[in-house]
Amino acid sequence: MIAFDNPAGYDYRLAAKVEVTTAKYKAAMCVTNRTAKNCLHKLGLFRMKGAGRATRYESVRT
Picture 1 (cartoon, rainbow, N blue to C red):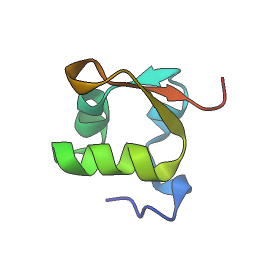
Picture 2: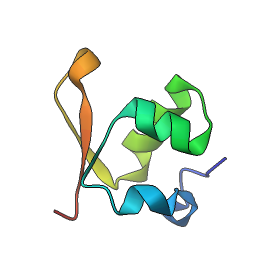
Picture 3: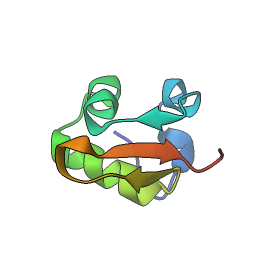
Picture 4: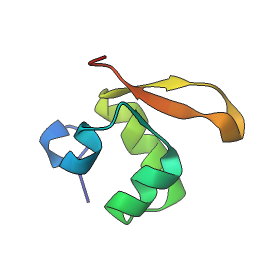
């Protein structure tokens, strides 16, 4: 599991992605849905786009 204060802990397969969903993050990191959402919010590497089931996280480096 990654620590929220350690961005180096995230899966580097996701670093190459321009956009990721909670489901894809959940599968890559083997975490619960809630943990995936928290990680995507707290890491600061992605910004949220959309709402509800259509939520996507876009890389902030683009």
